[in-house]
Length: 350
Image (tube, rainbow, N blue to C red):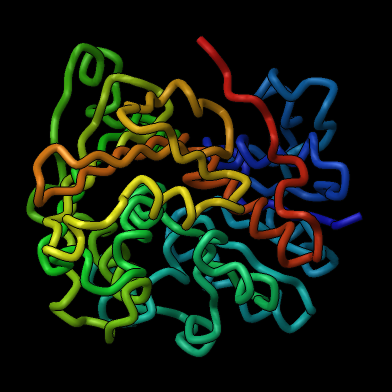
């Protein structure tokens, strides 16, 4: 049985981890931390977990995290890197759901997250936790930087087009992406109030969003070009939709003559043929966010609305495949389990 610790269990990704791990046959949560809520039973905060999680929140000092096999950080940026060295020295594996171990360029991290990186040496060994594109490295990893929710959808949507050289003009990719309000976290902010977010649709981060450099870093790696290369560049624009969960990404790529002659549907079906959590939908499909709600599945549809244009539609649940489900998928790989263990829940409808 894998002994699991969770740092920062009071937010949406924390409770999503608890929901998934409570049903996992090979994992046992032994500690969950919160300074503010220490002593409160988890089920008092989240009644959905009554009868499934009998732990109380404890302070990090009381949690004895060094006795765990793996620790998940469902915390703000900066927390995981401050505790990583001690945990690794004790032989504990680490999965960070924030951004501490995503961006390989320290200066880029410091620019977008406004803090110095506490352990560049550990960052250098950290593995980016997108199993469909990085499975073997995840199996061997001690430290996982769990991908952002938007970057997961963008990478999975563009990957088949970028892995085959010469299909698209990779220097001018476009990603229009929309997320439910839970992506902003469980905190009181005006823009996520019901009266502000309901009956509304808006773009944000138009001048630049911190997921932008993560997206471009990983798309360049997928395409096999050097970091920072202008050969691959994606314009990323996020939007807020009046929903709680879900991401819908609409991706555009200009096709080259080679790409115009390609069978895009066949390309995507072959690329994801053996992926348990990626569903390439039939030609002409338009996937909906509700078709993946509370599941670890991604649904993708590829279209060619113009002879020289590929359009890819991607939906995922931002809290599951976009965060906690993907983290559990990585844990399964790190401990030699089938990566689907504990993650085959049927999406919730309606």
